[in-house]
Image (tube, rainbow, N blue to C red; front, side, top):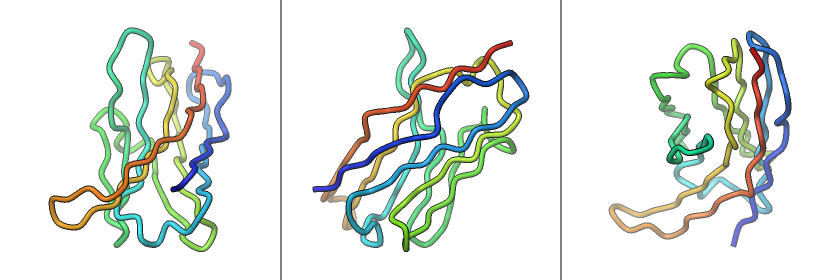
Length: 120
């Protein structure tokens, strides 16, 4: 089992920045894919960005160039640096961890979420 605890959310004006952190309760070295998802009111949860164990990253089109995901395996933590925030970035942001071998998912963990609100 892995517990994921997000922090760093809050209220910010449009154009501002926030950095989200996701601290895992144990080593994330063996976790293939760590990601950030978000869910706005009335909308489905969507992938914001994820990072694989080898460092490859993937971003939603809507955040590319503004957000940066990174992972620090030594600290068991994944970060999401969010710059040039827009009101449409307002959502609850969730951290997720997935480990797999080939097509077989071996673990799938989620944090409780942290609220990000961007005012216009």
